[in-house]
Image (cartoon, helix red, strand yellow):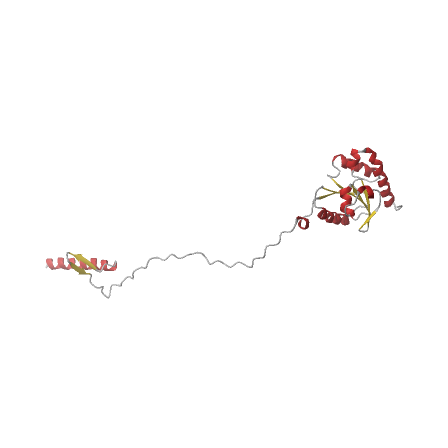
Length: 224
């Protein structure tokens, strides 16, 4: 009796072992030259389907199509895109405007100009001074100065030096020929004269500039 129970226990253990082998995919066991087949699974044992190899799934979200791309804007030239540097000092609205190259009232030339303005019975706060650097694009600077002059709205514009005179009067005007003579430019009276630097180099030229400034004062007084 004990022998039968031991045999049944051994068979149940062997059956469970074979079931585990079948679950793991082993169909038969080699024992010597005889293959021992694993018993079929009973209806109560649910077969576990073989797990297929894992498939790599990209988790990257689909790219959202971008909106229409605007064509690249053409590169504008410096003359049309940016205004050249032009400095303004004094009154923003004035009857009298001076225009010259240089740093403005700073330096010896600017100090001399301030003295000329004072001799004309004006202060530097009552007139407008526009200054610009030499060597800039002439067309761009001429447009810039024209806009600045229109904004100030002077009755008289005094151009100091040949470069300033050419930008306002236009062309390749010779300062020696037009100095001290009224020029009409866009409905404004323009008086070309010498740059203060020239007066510092030759003090004898001061009297010529002063004669020109007297014409300006007469014009502003309504007498000329």
